[in-house]
Image 1 (tube, rainbow, N blue to C red):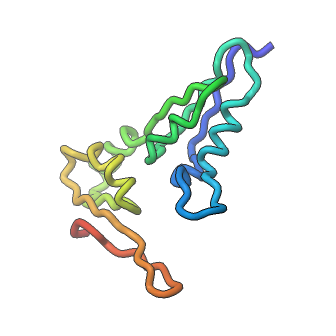
Image 2 (cartoon, rainbow, N blue to C red):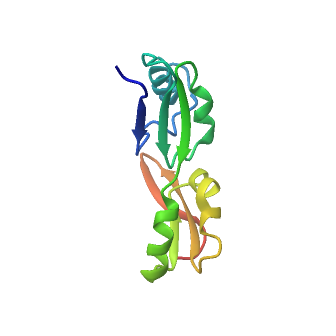
Length: 132
């Protein structure tokens, strides 16, 4: 019999879909969390290890038979940045920058925050902050 169940999610594909902005849209982050929360019990709660989730509020969707544990791989990345001559770290949006930029303090790197700008039907990625 299973004494302990640990689920590792190196990527949480619906991590930024924690809220809806129009009627009929599904908050898929909550749907995933409900599925994980209802895994069969093996005597103690299932541990759900989620890596580099940049919307911390998603952990509050988990309940019942699962305990969420948020992890990051950034400490593994820092030595590689230092020895690789990298001088800039770019984040895809403001949310990611708010969540992770502090991890890079102390390094001599430029922090860049990008964002999507809608131009008609097109979406263009622009630099919102920083100088790459």
